Length: 278
Image (cartoon, rainbow, N blue to C red; front, side, top):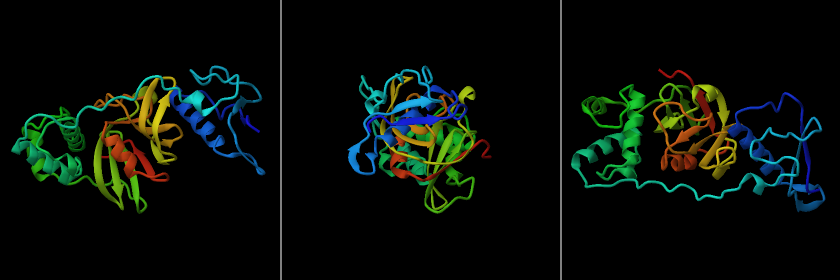
């Protein structure tokens, strides 16, 4: 059997945001093509015929032909190279900037490996995450108010009590994700969640897979270091990551931090999306 039929009833496959729809379809096809054709056959399933109420769902999945059986290749059609990340730091080393970086690292906003006394996107993103957590003006600059707050600031703390092990809290009001291990915040990372028309859903979820390079058919772009946690809604690297909600429901993470979060979380890790965290 190379083309199994997967049937869902009207209503349970209602139209949603295109990005989420394609992600869900990708999960389905990857799952089905990862099993054998039958209990006695070692031949894997190669194609999946999608039917809804016994009919072909034309137009439900933008950019994907559903009249014929679908393969994983049909859903992963990268005809452009993945984006190239900007350099992590540049310029001359300064003692004052190194001191700021050391403080940011001690509070959980910057990796210790990024403390080098040079400016760059990693340091700016750490400053922005600090400003977002502390409720300061979000400009990425270490001005007088930011510098003063750094002096007496405390490491962020989880907003909820959770299970032992690694988990994440997505704080929509602050546009920050807290990476938590045994109820201690390891890192606080800036994000951009779903814009009002496609808001990231509030609730308790879990990472359901890890995908290093996920091709978005409707948006014709790479979603790198993807961690789906609410159906097809995922953490993933994307640029730009503004200081306000701007995505189609997913949680955008900056380059470098996306890879770090991908390595930190595991399949099954709890993800709580929280609307108000103050």
